[in-house]
Amino acid sequence: MKKAFLFLFLFINCAKFGPPPGGPEDKTPPEITSVSPPSGATGVDTSAFFEFSFTKKVERTSLAKNVFISPALVDSFHDELNGKIYRIYPNRYLKKNITYVVTLGTGFRDLRGNFLAQAYTLSFSTGQTIDSGEIAGQLFEKTSPVNRALVKAFRISDSAAALDWQKPDYQTTSGNDGRFKFSFLPSGRYRLLASAGEKFALYHREITASKVGAKEIPFQLFLEPSDTAGLSLLSAQFSRDRLLVLTFNRPLNSSDTLLTNFRVAAPESVGLQSAFINPNEKDKLYLTAIFPLKELESKIYYPTASGKATRLDSSDFLISFSPDKTPPRLVWSEPKNRQGRLGLSDTLKFYFSEPVTLASETAVPTLYDSLNAAVSVVWSQPQADAFLFVPQKNLSPAEWYRFRFPAGSTVDRTGNSWPDSLWTLFQTYSPDSLGTVNGRVENRGEDKIVLEFRELFSGWSKKAAVTDSAFSVQLLAGKYFLFGFVDKNGDQKREAGTLSPFAFPEPAFFYPDTIFVRSRFETEGVDITIR
Image (spheres, rainbow, N blue to C red):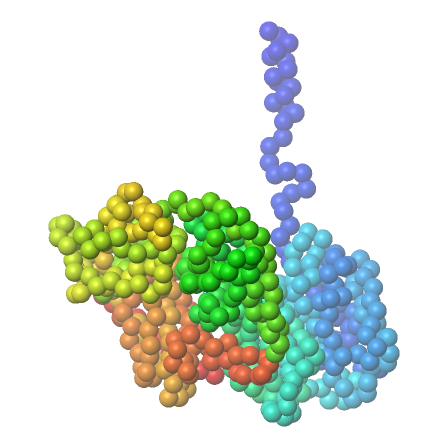
């Protein structure tokens, strides 16, 4: 007993409680404490090198590819990292009477993996004057700031001349809050291009640099999927519903679903019947056809674009000999089951796993109110696997409704049907839960403005088309981000612009503050200026 007691005492005495050895995890980004030559210096010798001192040691491998020097050096540079000191040595003398801009981008990190929070710019002149232009901006993807994206500035002498998008005049990267800045620019007009992965952003017009230090509202750029690489097929699979499922590298649009774009080659002739996309998987295209009931190695051909050229690519898949015995499944609906806050005149949308039809005129889908009374609806079928139901009068506020697909009411092409009833329960919103947002859009011209309010926590959103400078929009109580754009072509989709042939995007904006909406109150002063 004494031995056991002594062992317990020693165990407690030796145990140590607290943070693990080495202290708390280092999450502090590196900072630059000093530079040489001093930023803003003039009369710098043409034999100068550039030096940056950091607060901590940084990764050697990530440094050089995050150095941007404008104008480009005649014969590049070599560099060295010695402790916390980083030096850049031009391989040839600098040019005389030139303003040089040396930027360290946010893509390099310290030994703990912490990235530089904001790009750092060192600028100096080998003459007696220094350029003083500045362009500040912020990069978004919808309403989220984008960090560590590459941002390029192109100086424009002739708006009609083609640009080499691979040779920018100035480069930098966006910081943690999506902000970027070009400083010490020569006077003139510029175009901005940002890129992150396969997405890109153009600003909607040419920009004139302002004076360094001027209090300017940042120019806002918005990332969109790039279409320069065209459509790329990732996989082709034959499903148990006897559909050909194609998965692509990006979300698809209506032009991608044209049957004339696709051709199936098999030992037997296969004619495609329909193509559809579902809202929950926009990168997948479903193709229907009368496929032979035998195992066949087949090939799907599809068009891809690269720049201006279009070619025909292909992918192999295996047709199964198994017949379709799988009933159709509900894969997406709006509203979701047990969803609240549905609009009083909203369309009900239901998407299935495969093409479906209604089995008979007696077993029809029905909408019921809270007293179990049927509500009159009109249905349509916008694509082979979907049904839309429109109530013939506004639904009652703050009331629970049930939508029912009776057992066997929907059948697929081979007669399979779901054996049980499908129910969707939802509640409409109460007018007492609505508030109003009032504001103005300045410099909108004659074009329509599309506003999209997105609730921070639920993701609930509402679009509103504005045809006057003043707007008033009713929203459910909550906190909202506001994104919008000038709808020049009236299709309610923002055009992102193109690089070849060059076309500016439709102007877009993100309201900088969170909008608070209270029930039965008006939120005033949500004013936007199109720059």
